[in-house]
Length: 212
Image (cartoon, rainbow, N blue to C red):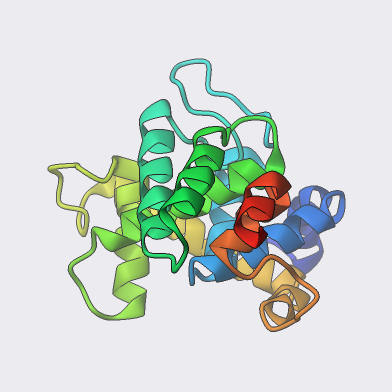
């Protein structure tokens, strides 16, 4: 792919992105919620499902945009609830938000699938014991591919190394084909900006409880 012509690269990445540009905007916004590089997130989505929130793996429980297994969905929800616990809201409001999180699904709905996937990426990043952003991203992708509790050497495992290579290539090509994505990160029109706003876009009732 590195050696393909620019037009060929554009053709490869253009179809899923052009046809769902609103979804791409949400993915970029969701990456900002979790302080993740948008191209890395989009690279994972491209590699795992080609932007299809209905994608399923017949050999496992993996499903959705980022092909989360049932175990990964559980970890994502637990991580989101951990973030809710850190919010400056009442206990009753936290209960309402956690109930909303329990109803999130990784399969079928782009927004819910993206939110859970980004949460899982951030959870995987939290397993890294390194300090530099690039190293943390490398470790995040390795844990994402191998599992957050793997006993393998995430720095040298060939499966992890290949997954990082593919993500780097996807991210680089997405950046070439769609440089405007980067401007979305600072565009105030692109919402939501916070986890609370993210949940509100899915479950408005949970935020009505907070506003009341």
